[in-house]
Figure 1 (cartoon, rainbow, N blue to C red):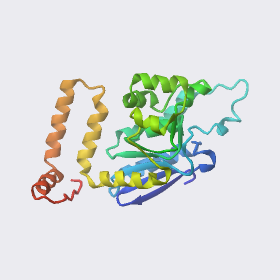
Figure 2: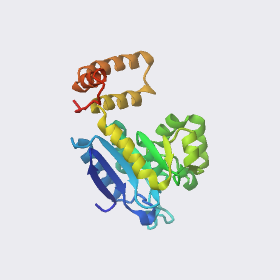
Figure 3: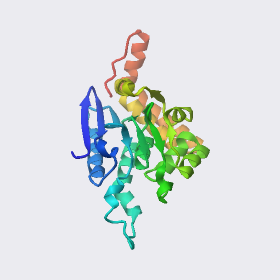
Figure 4: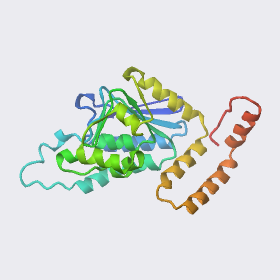
Length: 262
């Protein structure tokens, strides 16, 4: 692959955006490679958890504007909506809808669509050097790749308005304070901190994690009565799994459970 590396070990797939010389900006090769890789690890029965990070000093600076130099001349009319539907929306949907948990290990700047990628993940762990920038307004555009959907759900409408309308950088500590990330660690500790969270998730019951993710994703738009029905259905399903029986039995026997994902 030109833009990514993939490592799979201990049921954890780590996808690294590998264009450090341009702060891991997304070029035309990135999206098809990323979508194919996400599909691959989603279907892989040996993968329980997915980690996304960046090589070098950035998570991703978003769209590679150097790709646009030849196009942006007087008279050019970009059709960005069609480009979004082809290149970006598919991986947003894939991450949000897949059963497996996805962790963003944000090692540096996450700007534009790079910020959107981090927001689309289920958990964000940040290096002390991380910055989140909804940079779109600075080039006369609107937040995309689901930022207008994910960001208000994470930090509330007021803070989302602030970030998107001003385009200002939000550093790691502020991101922690407003609930954008779950923890901030020194830069050299980010891989170990991420691995610790990923290993915990990888050892938990896969079906319970999948149904929990699904319930939480739908909860913001689902009326209470429907959500209660969905919880009851999911709980009935979870209760019939071998992992549930193992979890209760291990608790009663005062031992560590050994979940099998079934």
